Amino acid sequence: MLSDDTIEYLIEILIERLDSVNKKFLDTMAERLRDVGNLGVADIYKLEKMLRYGSDISMIKNYLAKVSRRSNRYIQKIFDNIAKLNYVEYKDLFQARGVKFIPYTENQELQNLVSDIAKLTQDEYRNLSKSTGYMLKHGGRYYYTDLAKTYNEVIDRAVQEAKTGSGYNSSYRDLLKELAQSGLRTVDYESGRKIRLDSAARQALLNGIRNVNQSMHNRVGEELKCDGIELSAHLNCAPDHEEYQGRRYSKKEFDDLQTRLKRPIGKWNCRHLAKPVILGVGKPIYSKEKLQEMKDKNAKGLDFNGKHYSLYEIAQKRNQIETDIKIQKDIIDLMRGDTVEVLKANAKLKQLNKDYKSVNELAGFYSRQERLRRGKEAFRNG
Image (tube, rainbow, N blue to C red; front, side, top):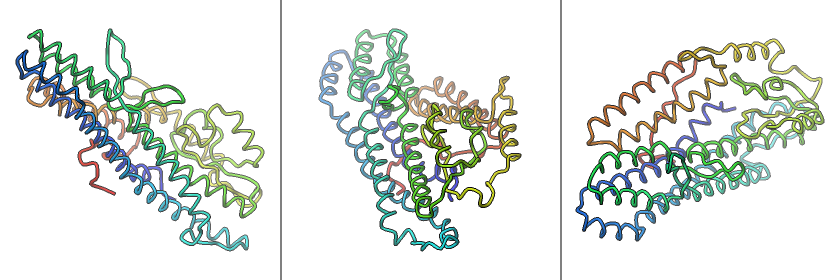
């Protein structure tokens, strides 16, 4: 079975494609704001009127739609390959139970199941791309605006500053930093939260892949008449699932557990899978002692920058540092030509890279360089 790290690496190609849309929008805004700053008052009115025709926004939206369309085939390809690799692991179990094993490439029913899940994931990926915007600051508070409104409001602010004839360079920098720090966002309609599009897409894709794996486990359990499940286990587990991972349950026990948990197994960022087993046959992969060792190691955690973190918490901290590094790279790119601002941004980036290296070394994580890349060529892979 492919590891979580390998799967995340595979889907990072799709995340980079979406990130390229963020970069294109930021680059477009930087170019337009420079245009405003370089014109006289009379010409500013002409430019403002021209920009409001919306050709830039149409270009960005078309680009976003193209990214979404081109990703469909890659999503199906990933899901098929993962299903094929994971399903073959059950071959010996089928033979031991005296049940004919049909390879994935010949199992049309299983292929249809995977295709259905892939289509749902493609739809979710596409819907995320349709509801995009940025968080802007007004009166000390942040609010969400869609792409077109963001574009028009930023142009309006720039034009008003340019008309006054003073302090434009400072305002121009602040506007671009505001956009970079927000990043392209989408609305999570369940919670109402506005989250970065790259994070939302990553989670949608990972959930889809876990759906494929869990659906296969469920199908195998039915075919082999398994009467129980064994939960997978991993290091750095979230506190709400830690005491349940790695254990075996009857189907009823597991259903009862799912009902009790506020965050059910396999939902909302959960990495666990419920694998079919025949109770009383064989032993769980993880002994009670090993599971306790993992729990103790998580709690022991580490100290970073004067604060104690469990391993689960430091893993979340690493995620945030990765996002902050990408934001800082965006700011450096947008501030090009302004030596002072670039120096400031480079100093922050240097500290973030130092923190990232420290966290990885202290926790024994590997450096996920693919997460630190910014979208440059949306279609160079896949």
